[in-house]
Amino acid sequence: MSERVGGAVYVAVSATAFGAMAIFARHAYASGADVVAVLTLRFGIAALLMSAFMLATRRRWPRGRNLAVLAAMGGLCYVGQSLSFFSALNHASAGLVALLLYLYPFLVTVLGAAILRQPLGGGRLLAVLAALLGTALTLGGGLAGQPLGIVLGMAAALIYSIYILAGARVLGAEDPLAAATVVMVAAATVFAGLAIVRPPAFPATPSGWGAVLAIAVVCTVVAMLSFFVGIRRLGAADAATLSTLEPVVTIVLAAVFLGEPFQPLQVLGGAIILGAVIWLTRAGMTRPGAAAVERA
Image (cartoon, rainbow, N blue to C red; front, top):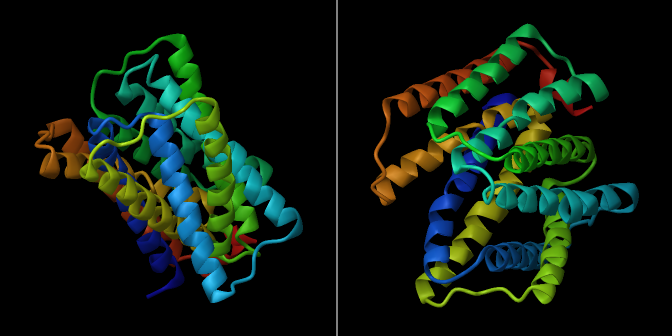
């Protein structure tokens, strides 16, 4: 398996794991948990598991400037993105907020070209726009919202774009597991502080706690580690574009486990996203050393 195909597989695993989070979150909220509780437990459990594995395997922890960047990615970017996204849901429809968040592949591609001087070809830009169109179709209608909700949704996309670009730079020198662990510890620390200020409502049933555990292990540890490996192999722009598989996964899982029906436009949107993913993966294979250049 080539470096690029392997990277695409890791991003697909990440998108699948992230895409399942909405299903598990639905069960956690149904058991009485609130947003602060879910996020605090999510990052806290993930940080404990990953830190324990780091200590058990005696892996090298990031140091110096990279450590500071990773801590900022977790404590500022990840926390800021999560709070912006969930706050936006109070002022705009879920479809609009999700669509605004998925502006991040476009932002990562453009900002990467402008700031980090990453190569930007017409084909790649077309793939990003196609993925954005596919996302819009996949998320369906109900795109209504107040100005504050739109601003918060766009803020979530911008913060996440900065997070991905920062990660792409650091991952050239750090182990993905060590980097992800620092991000988790920083995010867990901030959310623990928020939980002290605003006491959360924890799950009231065993199934609710099981859903939270799945969010922490599958949708956080597996998802983030896989995404970091994908960024390292593909570069920030292509990894971000391939991660638009996430809403497709969410809709498929919602249909299977929650009985939510497919809409024709959602099927078309999913097909467009898959087409963009396949094109990006195959196009990168025809450019020897492309992934290495993007990680430099």
